[in-house]
Image (cartoon, rainbow, N blue to C red; front, side, top):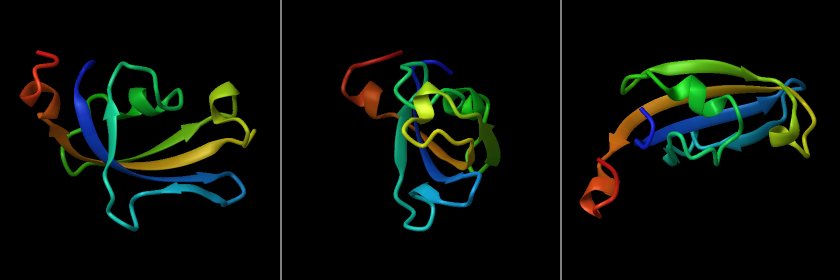
Length: 93
């Protein structure tokens, strides 16, 4: 839900197959605060409602937030876990 800090892994490729982001192969977590609008449009919407361990494939059309690529993106996102870090430091509910 909005305000949650979630840890994901992401593999994002252009339609032509060029990898533009890959935290999945290194198992590096990618933290996203849902609702803050700091990731490409469509990614947050695709993550909302996911459960730990779930994998989704998202298709994000080219637009201002995918620039300078100017290509559609195929994003495989794995929801690793929700983080309680914000609560630990006194932020959020």
